[in-house]
Amino acid sequence: MNKRNIHSFVMRFLEAYDCQILEKTPASVTVKLSPEADREMTGRPYYWSFIERTGAAAETMTYKFVIDPEQMKLETKPKPAAITAVQSPPPTGYGPSGTGGAGAPAGSAPDSILGRYFGFVPTTITTRVPQDDVTFGSRRLDQIFGIVRERGRFIHVFEEPFPTGATYHASLVYNTWLCVNYKVELLCDRKRTEIHSLAIQLGTGEIREHFHKQMLTKSLSPKLPANSHILPDTISIPKAINALEMMLERKVSTYDHRWADEANARHRSEIDRVEGYYNGLLLAAEPDKRDEIEIQCRNRLEEIDWQHKPRIAVSVINGGLFHLNASRIASRN
Image 1: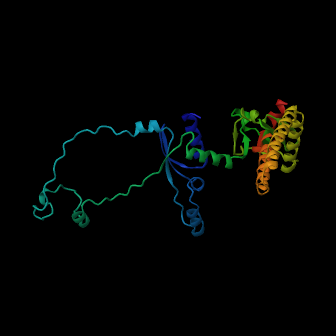
Image 2 (image 1 turned 30 degrees about the horizontal axis):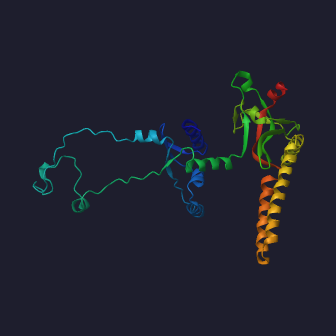
C-alpha cells in the first residue's frame, strides 16, 4: 500500500465509525473518536466500564494520525519570524494610584494578586493531542487492519438502482444471495492456496462461483433503497451454508491429487530416516537415557507429520448477504 491508499483507507475507516474530523491535511488527520471507535482503539476497558456503571457522559479521545511523516516534518518546520520593535512598558509604582498610574494603557486588565506576587498566570489550558504514525507496518495501522478484519467479516448490503428516470422510481424487487469466501489450502511440505467465492440464492437455491468478481462492478449500499421490497427466502441460512460446503467439497474432490501421493512418499521416507537414526541411538544408549531419547523421537515424528503429511484445510475468510435487483439478474440470465 502506498501513502495515498493508506490515506483513503484510514479516512473510510474513520467515516464508517462516525468519527469527527477536526483537521485534515495531505500528511495527517486530527480526529475526535466516536464512542465505538474509542472502545476499539484506545484500550480503556476500565474507563468504559465506569461509564456504563455510572451512566456518565463519555469523553472520547482525540488523536492526530500522521500518514506521511516526511511531509509532516516539512509542514511543521518553523518559519523565520519577522523582527518587530517592541515598546518597553512604563515602570510601575510611579502613578497617582501607585499601580501604574497615568502611564498604564487604557483598557488594560487590572493587576491581580496572583500576577503581582507569582508573576504571569496562564488563563487558558492547552490539551496535548496524542500523535501516532499510520504508515505501512506501524502499530496503529496494524490495529486498524485487525479491527476491519474482525468487524468486517460479515456484511449486509443492497444493490443501488441506476439513477435514470423510470428505472430509478419504479418498484425494486430484490433477491437475497448468501456469499461465503473460502480459503482452500493444499498442505504438505509445500503449500498451495486458493480462494473460492461461492454464493447461493436463498429463494431458488442457485449457486454461483466467482461471486466476488461479479460484485466489483455493482454499486452496493448498507441502506435499503426507497420503494423496494425483498422476495421471501425459502432456504434457511444453515441449509444454504451446508449446500455451499457440499459444492466446495465436490469441486475439491475433482482435483488431481497426485501431489498427495508424492507427499505421502516423501513423508514415509522422512519417517524411515528419523526412526532409523533414533533406533541406533536407543541400541547404544544407557537404560536411564532411553526414555529421553524416545520422547525426542516422538516429538520429531510429530513435527514430520505436521510438515510432510498431505492434508486439505478449508477456512472461511468472510461472507455476507447481498440483496440484488431481481430484474437485472433475470435479464442477464
